[in-house]
Image (cartoon, rainbow, N blue to C red; front, side, top):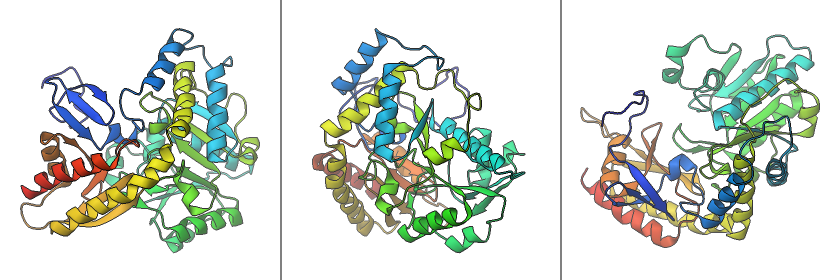
Length: 393
């Protein structure tokens, strides 16, 4: 299909027109079962009337006023976000990548206030934090970075789930350690409990800021509002986006009171559209609906069924292995050798033809990130469709 777009995305040959619940419909009115949720964005699925009505009402009031003034939706959204995550101060952005940029600025300013020249940041191999230059600098994928160098200096990469690898990189100039609680693009790899707790201890010992990227794994996807809650630790900074607005472009970084007081001041950061009334009305309503609909309880109930379904498929097909993940963010690795290596992307394309939307991730992994409203019936439908697809390989 010829369009006016830059050829940046390898788009699938389908045009979606509308959605309802956990189903999408294309321009020919064909139905698709969605187990990708717009890359873990549409936590409430499609066509949620309460969310839509809240947005319509806000459109008729105010869409934008700038951050030179307060708005009721922004105040309410910020209060609900800090209550949910356990931290204290919010800055609303327009995207996850912008949230990462803000978190990096906080870390640099925190180090500056301590008198640290040329602060260093430790990130993880196989991580993904975004495509802007700052976020790309802490993304542990050389293929993404190579064409855009030089990037930010002072970034070192450790091995995920290897505390000794991290410890070997710590210096007096280390200002922050950044990682995803569950690596998403890197192949759906959860942090090990001991590793994350050891990181928290390490950061406390040397006054290093622990930044957890919860953009994909947060907002209920793990079965708790934020995935780090499973580990019994609290980070210094979190980044959020995706299901934070359930389709409305919005993100945030949230910091502890201690870090806020010791870092950013008036004029240090800004965003024209960040925290606008429309986006914050979405955030506020999303938190309300998560509670009203029992989203966390539903994830806890259906996630084991999804994992069991994937394990069953893995046992049937020799080119599948290592089902892994947490909650409704699950992955299953595709393993094949020889000249005609089977790629996860080929399975994703074949699934789309069968009316099933799934995702690919790094490490040749199939990624499943459905709306958080799925039921056992939808898992059965996914299993049947994917079984038919896998049989063709």
